[in-house]
Length: 120
Image (cartoon, rainbow, N blue to C red; front, side, top):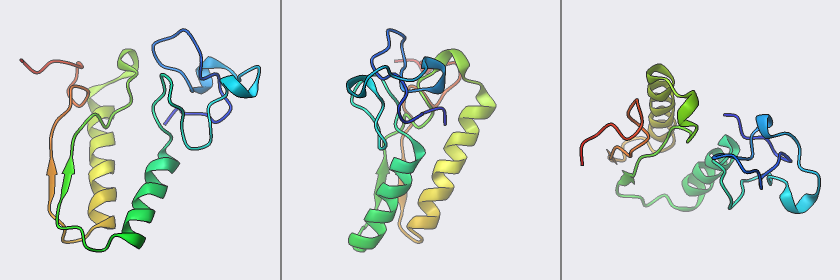
């Protein structure tokens, strides 16, 4: 939720492309509209567009395997309630986009709070 197009994608912090990183000084270091390959979570618009594309072009889906890591990777800023909210919103969005399609969710290491709290 904190992704900001044009923000500094090449920052030295653990997570970039956020309004807290400030704006990039040049285009080569700017976070793109749909995301960035560097240390950035993707913007929600990318998820929305992906789901729209899938529903319009692939109406033959038998099931969905959701592999986890839905919450942002800003572990210093996470709370249990925020993680549950992101998971609930994501599941609602999938159920709405793919009614009747079975969804098999798996938990990633970022779903729990604190992060990485599942035993190996």
